[in-house]
Length: 257
Image 1 (spheres, rainbow, N blue to C red):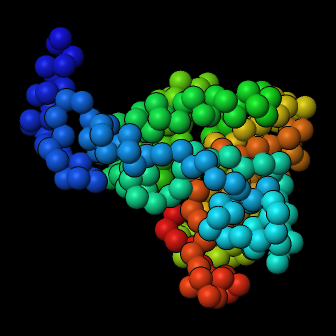
Image 2 (cartoon, rainbow, N blue to C red):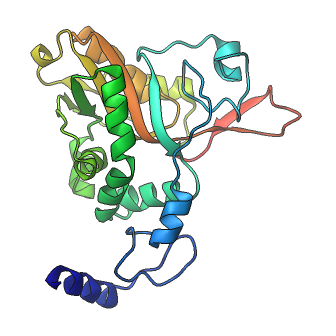
Image 3 (tube, rainbow, N blue to C red):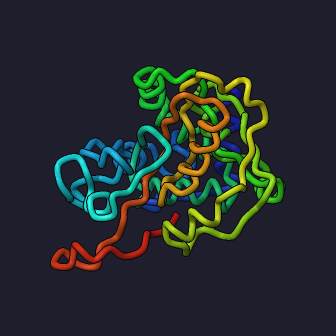
């Protein structure tokens, strides 16, 4: 009862509105959206995915289990598979951006609650011994106040091992393509205790999968440090944008993320 009164008081003193329908958020809501909009808009993606990069095949059809990009470029990654809960658009994008850039920490708890069952299912499916969140550089961590990946895992009630660190900041990734991102992330990460990785199957956890450059670099490092297999799980996946349906063969840059 007291908890409900406290939450009601906070909602009145610090009013916020649903990022989808604009309604006043009071009591039963999911941080950035009303309960109804969250349940309708924050949906698990259930379409077929490219077996190499995880891209939704319906949005970038190629051949059989490969998307057009991996088919044409014969791409390979160090990780053994990609899993994600939803696509980085609409409410999921709003929620993640509010968490990261507006430092709205409560969103992590709501996202964690949402993905918990699916994430635990993936951990069981791949036989992961360790869940390792992607780390932040100390300057980013100081500015934000928390690592969003760790906070989401706490919300999902999934134990994790902070075996990675990021001693070097690197360049901003937001406008770079895959090859540039791959160069940008080389050498930025370090393993704290390699002994814990020997022979293990690792699930690398992050908030958004954009090009896969960061996940690829870390997966190489984890395997070099002794991990037997590395799978990737992110909350959301950023699909490649196509100019037009008629020019589906002309690949262009990525969306936000």
